[in-house]
Image (cartoon, rainbow, N blue to C red):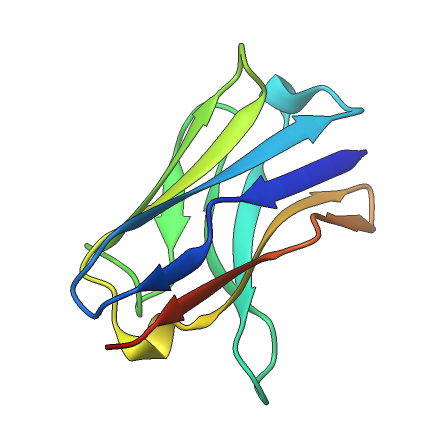
Length: 114
């Protein structure tokens, strides 16, 4: 299993970013995949997930601002982040949980600051 996240950067409050995650080494279209984030000094937290059928679920802190999508043909996972806040500053990870094992991408830094 390999997960490669990209698309992070520095953005001003109120701005937008789109993160991508390239997946390989497993049957992507059959699996739920997630986005997590970890801010400095805080525990890693679930941002949201998307099931194999395209259903999504989000943390309350990002509902209405973030959107997760997937492209099963390209084996890509996406996180569209709008109306970004300084509290969204974190390293963002794509994640696969399967059969009791956890697989993580390397993370991409998102910094929201003026």
